[in-house]
Amino acid sequence: MADSQVLEKMRADWNARAKEDVRYYVAFGRRGQTEEEFFATAGGIVRQLEEELARFPKHISAEALRGLEIGCGPGRLMRTMSRNFGELHGVDVSDEMVQLALEKFRGATKIHVHRTNGADLDPLASDYFDFVYSYAVLQHIPAREVVYGYFSEIRRVLKTGGILKCQLNGLPASQKSPDTWEGVRFARPEIADYARDHDFQLLALEGAGTQYMWTTWRKQPHGWSAGLTSEGASTRIRGLGNAQTGEPVVPASGRYAYLTLWMEQLPSDCDLNHLQVAVEGRAATVCYVGPPAWDGLSQINVLMPPGVRTGLLSVEAFWLEKPMCPKAWLHVIPAGPLVPRVCSVLDGTNLLAGNRIESGTVKLVLEDLPESPSITASIDGTALADVDVFCTDALVGRYEVNVTLPEGVPRGAHMIELLCGSRRLAPTQIEVV
Image (cartoon, rainbow, N blue to C red; front, side):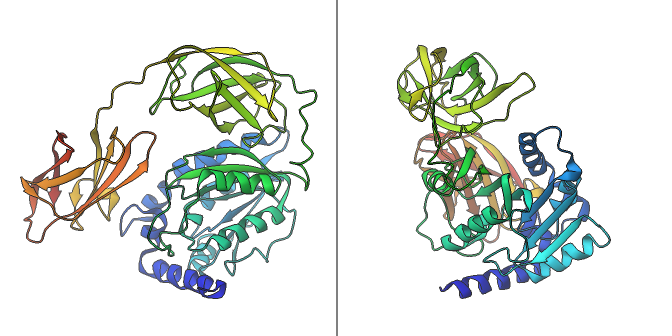
């Protein structure tokens, strides 16, 4: 499809979804959500976004900041995010979404909503915004060039030093052609390379390999990356431990194999593309570089390298491939055993319905599964033929299992049983309504 066809398809599909059930398609919770339910779903995302505002100097007040949301829809996030800015703008490709947002914020003097063509941010001035954010939007775009066009435009409208925080689909590539619901997917190296090549300081890239991959960039001047130097970089590791639990030990693999380093006098230009961390000489994956805390220390989170042994291991940090501090020492312990289990059972369409199955489909989330597991399912002892299994987070062995109930299943309580290979998981109850 040519670009114009892609953009028109995006607009048409999202206009249709807005008319059908806007709250369902924006928040994924359930059909027919109340306004209170709908806006309550924004809470966790808003907290994640607001954490990035700590990167701005404390002397800058909220009233002095300008924000922009890419894909604002009917204003689910904007309503709460507006408290962080003196001026907040939202853009959307859908006429219907924009109209709903305009009605919602009628009379709100610091909130501004614009319809765009889906290819650029033409209504907005260059070098204008301090903070740009986007959630559950870029994952629905069916063409890579459109996403990259947004990245280019975001760089244009951000001030130098401004911050972008956005979510992308980081699941492995699929054989299915992308559309306006299941859009294009991005691997970690692709995003890291783009940030480096376009002089964005890459501050966070978390959730790689999952549908909800988050990344944070700071706009730097053109030529910034090429002009970096390690001269004068002298820091020290003041503390290290488990990024998930805060304990002074880190397992060699698994869900808790995240290491936090607390760094003193970290160079302000440090980012994921130019900072390396090694555990006993093995390269770890740096995922997050935080702003200086109240005590001047900066937090760096890294994913432990595969194949690392247990024991007391050295940890080294490098800036532009040169050592930047003395070694530190980390106690690495064996990973705990895998315990495959069902974490949640939901209606496949109305997620807020819990285990009350209204749609005839059941969504089960499993964790601690081995790689490429063999999953079979049954209801009340009868095997289910329509079972769809896919990995949503390889690090924690999280898989989503979607099953379609056969016609004629009566209303009332039923038991779903799953087999992971030869291992029988605890049965889970559903109520068909």
